[in-house]
Amino acid sequence: MNFDQITEPLDQRLADGLGRLAAVARQLDWQAAESAGLSPTQADILRFVANRPGGSRLTAAADHAGVRKATASDAVSTLEKKKLVRKISDASDGRALALKATPRGQRVAREWPGSFTPVVSGLSEDEQALLYGLVVKMIRQLQERELIAPQRTCVSCRHFRENVAPGTATPHFCAFVGAPMSARHLRVDCAEHEAAA
Ligand code: SF4
Image 1 (cartoon, rainbow, N blue to C red):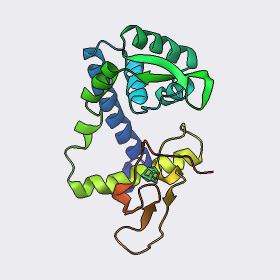
Image 2: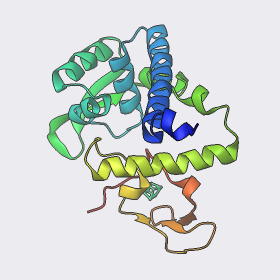
Image 3: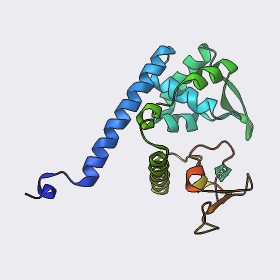
Image 4: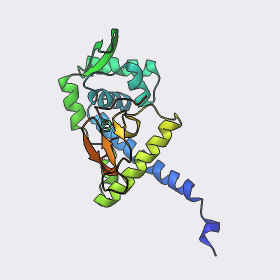
């Protein structure tokens, strides 16, 4: 008997495994949100806004949370009532409003554990580095296919110089920091990110 004949295709099993991990992470997120008295969407938006000290537009927060603008707007109203988020003038357009986390909102978001932290904590550092490289690659492919909202990743940043020192331990370069980078240094949510043209 050949196992290939009685086993689901590899991509199917991989997708199934990732789906299970995502479900665990989502459940941990819900528990953390519940303990802070928030819905998962409110928690998602608070974390997103807290990571953008300069402010974030509602549309970007809605895209990140994967909800409609009206749903995001309801979530923001609740966060405002709880004094976790406030509205400010958008620095790039004075007539528009942006969302900013209050000091209390920053504190609540900071105290949350990353939902995938327990999922990856059982891997060795080398295994985490290997998996991280694959995650960066998958995010990049999804971005190129426009299947996820734009992310603040190195690979979409105008400061990123890819593979300028091939064959070395640090083949990439960040022109913002002015330092060489290896694959494990690449960021998926960098505050200094500026979209490449
Ligand atoms: S500024 Fe941030 S996102 Fe851009 S290349 Fe440097 S580390 Fe990466």
